[in-house]
Length: 333
Ligand code: RIB
Image 1 (cartoon, rainbow, N blue to C red):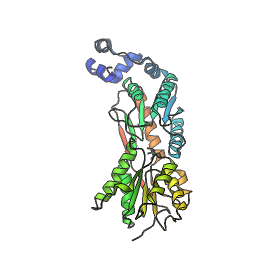
Image 2 (cartoon, rainbow, N blue to C red):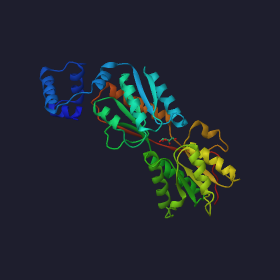
Image 3 (cartoon, rainbow, N blue to C red):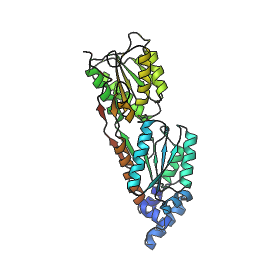
Image 4 (cartoon, protein in one colour):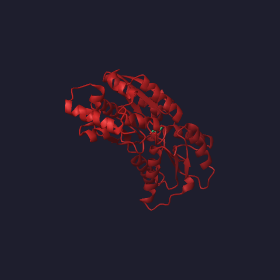
């Protein structure tokens, strides 16, 4: 399926001009209009009717698709996006894909049919066929938190590799050497990049990476509980845990308590996200903070700019992380 950019290139105009010819939303000279129409015919380009109606729509409504609205990280992101959109005169319709591609597809269709002016999207994995088609058809989209491979689309991320590096360097500086890592789903770029950071921190100090200390979680509390319980039966047990999100770290707290271990006296724990709960569990979690308000503001800003000018080149924003030190960690040497 030819793209709007290919039509623009063949006609010698910008993608914005092609969009205005298709939607008749602005004057275009007869010559340029004809060149666009000729290019569309030669390439057999057929604009998606629904995507086209979106561009005419101006419903002042944005779509938001999240993979797990029960996870506080996403609940806080959703609240921040809704707040930022509302301040800019837009409403938000939320769809929860439950980490399922089929349900993600349903919500993409539902939101397109509701003629949202644009879509903010957190993927269930590292690709999304339904979204890829919409982007190619010119729907304004911003991808947040997880990269989508092979798609030229506005994207807002945080520096996940730096997050894993910072957390592990911090634990090494506290004197820990047997540091376990509980990962998130391996098909998600945030988790994969955090684990790369964990490995890099050990390697830069010429310390071995013990693969038995790296266990797969799924970003839910129970996987943190299970994996840490299993690790406590390995000898010698880890003295510290880097856990790739706060929800699994909260599950880990229960496993450590059931094993009779005091956090931070007997072992240290670093989580990831800095959800509001992180500072209210016992002990309050040391964690890597992802600034959810900054992510939301960046996503809404990129989307509104894209709605105003569909021909903009795709942009990527990578926001910084920072370590938030609380009471779940302690120096041991
Ligand atoms: O807690 C949910 C996790 O999934 C977060 O770390 C966020 O980055 C997302 O990828």
